[in-house]
Length: 175
Image 1 (tube, rainbow, N blue to C red):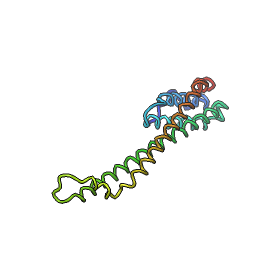
Image 2 (cartoon, helix red, strand yellow):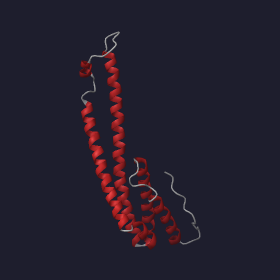
Image 3 (tube, rainbow, N blue to C red):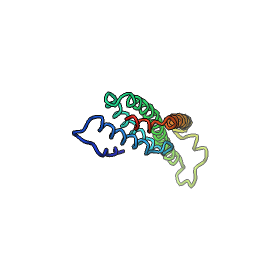
Image 4 (cartoon, rainbow, N blue to C red):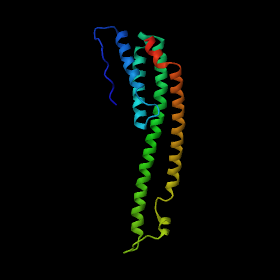
């Protein structure tokens, strides 16, 4: 995700004035994403939280306690969204690996077919080389789906708390 361009920066202006413009742009960028969005949107939201966090951390000495507190909140958002992203990536890896095993088993089943066969006996399934791996992969997939759901619920609760507390408005107002 490409960062939004910050408008109105003045190279000869004060750090505080320019930092406020950057923070405002990064806050708007963060809030441009749907917290219930798809995995790519949530990943982009994590990147936006990271950008906001870093600018707040760098400018906190000039901007004060509001920037330091905002950086802490942005870090928590970034961390939760990072854990969600890890689950999404793991689920994709598990699915790809499962598909490779299925492909290998399909080839093995074809190799077991008698010459000139027009169908496979059901008993062929007992001879497939990867048949014992699927249960573990399905269990692992179920675990990461459940973990992702719980992390997303936690993220939504965190996001809603920030909304109720006026995080966005408070940060922009103080800065």
